[in-house]
Length: 353
Length: 92
Image (cartoon, rainbow over the protein chains, first blue to last red):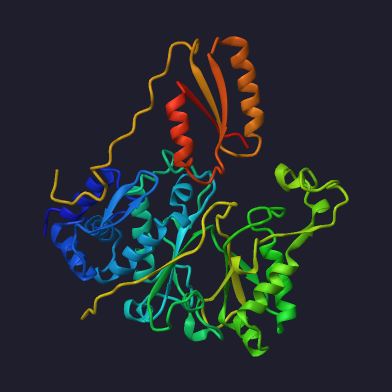
């Protein structure tokens, strides 16, 4: 039987309009968008945020159009709205994140009961494919950055390399496999609250550590990978995520270590004397001129300079499958006045599915 | 055009680059360092060449607190109100 291929035509039309991320999008019909708006529990013309750097108006309807295109189910809308609200907070610096020659992309981290309600993956393959909610929520955020923020690659978004997370980047925390409070609870939210956090994030760097059975054995391996975030002599870095697999987290939990203990250990370990951080030693980068100027003789000064500004800049969460002693470092994009981790509660109406 | 809704913000005004002057003679030129490494070296050289080759009324140096964020409003207003030409340095 021969039928007109309406969907294929629509997909091509949307490519021609230049509003995709390079993958085909779901055509945003009035009916689909209206279903998404209804599921948000908000009026379509409500302004959620202005999206830097072009400051396009992210109304609920515009967010819904992009979410439909990304393939979101209507009930994902509250998560996308909260993520956009967070990413447009001044503290996130989406202007810089979208325009920089560096590579960051908003990583959407979801905590709370909405993970189960929407089937947001926090377990095996957490950064990978196979889960509609993760794939399409992260993709919706990207489409909004481009279509409302203007972050077109090579035009406004000047990232030299970028990374695959710029297609989609969304994970849940595996709270049930963690010995600790979740990332959101640690930052003041209630355990029964659903919350998103956004981090201006580089690609995850996997850390293999199969033979470490105590915190004292595991931490040096984690620290060695954290030491090279951005550049091996970059210091005073800000928010960066350490994603512990459940098996690695259990090493700390079984030994009675708190998150604060892990953070403190890493912060103290990741410090180097001024004399070892001079520019030009074993590579071009080093302490900036205005910092070096504070020390009389940098070539012999042994004052320790930390990799991370404070222990609290090392953010911990537990994610991934129950089997496997692999963790990941997710570097933030956090120059001295750059981007910080930003949280927003998710305001989700009750849905019947 | 079809019935598909517009995912962009059609209200946003497209930006145009400013008109380029034919000459810098008699103009106030601002050199804006965005705080990237070695931006000052680049601007030092540009200032030197401008002083050699033009009759600019004044050459003013300004600096953003960080390259990672837009220039603060105060700095932008200072520049807008007092300059004819702006050169922004990236460097690295």
